[in-house]
Length: 139
Image 1 (cartoon, rainbow, N blue to C red):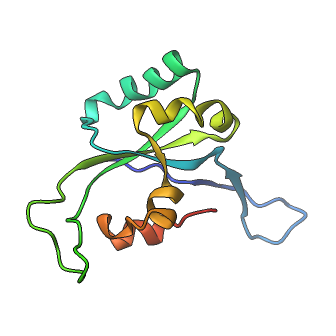
Image 2: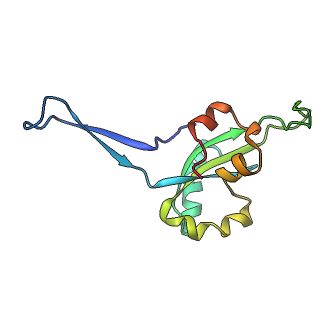
Image 3: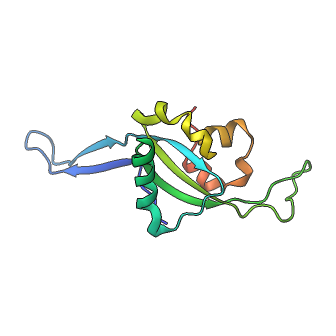
């Protein structure tokens, strides 16, 4: 599945006033709040329908990030619980300007903020460490 870069980088031709170094311009992406929709199956050919659903039904702009398959739950001793894990969770970003109007309606769908899942509910063990390091909680 494809992943969208969080910062778009472009290089312009050198300006004659400056040294012969190209100028790099970084444009900040307005999609910053990562969300988790647990137990959701989404095929690659359904991504645009997914984006359209949120725009048309909720008036919210989203950007699909990825689908992760969860690792097993852990018991009190830190051992993997048999026959757990394997759930498909869809991760996506909500546009900064739409977060407030999405905050309450998302709950009826079971959608959670990434920070709640990872930091406040102690579920980091469900996701690959590489993904967590690449997408650290922001609050």
